[in-house]
Length: 445
Image 1 (cartoon, rainbow, N blue to C red):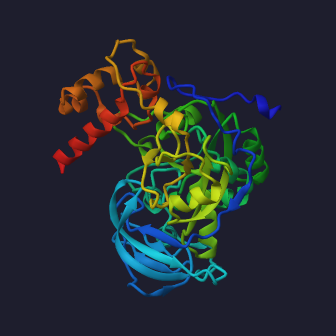
Image 2: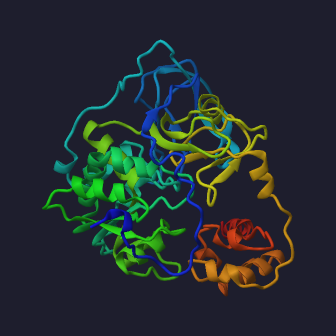
Image 3: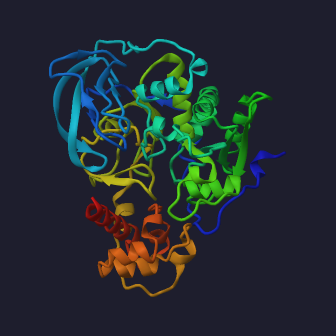
């Protein structure tokens, strides 16, 4: 088989986008130096914020728990570096508003060896102990959503799940951190999958990888044992192939019902980066203190894939990687679903997969004023959820939010941005939908 010509399974609709991955796809993961200080929001994940265990002036060592989980839907936070707590105060976050955070001054004289953790055998644990250990590690989904991993792997008794689906698509332009993890941390990835299979009790694991990553397909297949109930499925390179429902359809041929979740069709989905972190952390008894990100874009002099301490401010990354622009706006994540931030104090968190740096001309090109909808139907043809973005956009402008949800299934939209991408009138449809969903959630609270 010639891997570079692998054919892939896919889903209907979606869009073709320029990959822009050549800038970093061949660059091995390198460790970014530790910054002078780290900013650690207490809610870097979906769920309840963690509760601080430290006080101002306290010395901590790398890996030490500095905030505890506040219940089931919460995660602890571990010190990403040895240093001293200098503040507990609101700081900028990738979500926008300032949120309570622990500010840690990094000790420049320390070797920054991991000072916490005790080796153990996660495959010898019963499920309850294993799930507790996963929560103790502080692991959240590293693909962007930052959903607590222990919650996702805790399958309720009434749900019958038979397949663990691993997302290795990385369909966002520019991002290549997952690609490099599949190549460089294959053993950790496979170990993490075995641990997750034990936690969920599934019989099979399937890894979906886009056909523009033939080297990753080969590396994973080479890392599997013959008796492993784990297989790789090659899927077509198309956006948003990595979305849960799209990948389930492409890789397994199953369709999640409207308003439903993957468990309803017997599937649990996790990202390759999350599984590799699980396979690295659990056997060592360590907590999550760093992650791999892609730093890319036309305005960066030293693009690449970097292992960075959680809490590293964007400003430090700009200095180290060489930002050539003048406008103070950057994208955390990819250009399709990432969030734009302007505060350079904003830190890297568990859900940050990349930092995209654009020149002024790219930012200005994306800032064209919206024109009137011409009813061309391109957004309808692009929507992977088979919604009607044109009608939803019209209702959003009229603030008919209940109608959007009840008759046009607004809540099935996962904000992939396909509609905005293809709109010739530059209507910010996905922004309309985010606002509408936010208002509906506030009304329901």
